[in-house]
Image 1 (cartoon, rainbow, N blue to C red):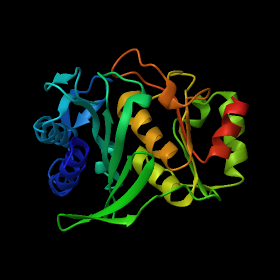
Image 2 (image 1 turned 180 degrees about the vertical axis):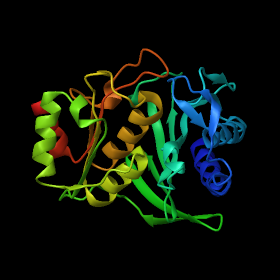
Image 3 (image 1 turned 30 degrees about the horizontal axis):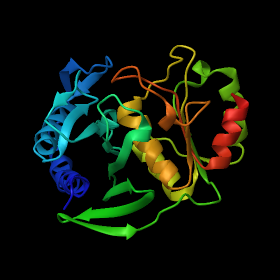
Image 4 (image 1 turned 90 degrees about the vertical axis):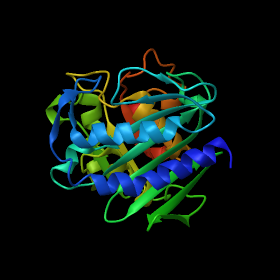
Length: 278
């Protein structure tokens, strides 16, 4: 078992533990993450649990998390960046959330072109795991401690069905608002406040997800290292596109670990239209 296989196995076996620990951690913690967001108790716990599990792997050289300021040096090897509990604000209303992981063959912060694997675990009615590696995407179901593939060589459906756009509508730039008005006349709205929950809709049915730059926050909300790059890698491996509005998210050279970026993901034709509108 190589390092990537071990990372996938550790994330998979950690999923039932994390899911099982959510019920007692729905309160806010008395802390903020490096992006200035109030942490949930579940954020802190999932981060600490995954840190212990992932930094213990031979072949992991660096570890970074959306929930902590800097990079942990583990020795020599691959760099692992995680969002331990994406969509944790949904815990109060009991909606979807999960874990995002990107594995880079370069020191952090790194370009998405240095990714060698990306995955997410989604806690919905069932627990699923989407893994992109070597240009292919596989979806697994995690049940009773076992991980079994349910769809291999997954690609985005050719006929898009759904869309989900984040941010307050009055805060959108006019160009994005024009694009959104076109899309809402063509596709069905699916937006639940968890990036991976919304993106899993796109991966399943085809469509587009975006958390654009806003007038109050032109740099966007989502983090490049922990959210944009890993999910962009998965989408592109499935035949779709990622974009910051001008280029692939994977082509961005990061300036700092917690850098934010506008994120647009989905079927190629829809992202092409977006870029021509912005």
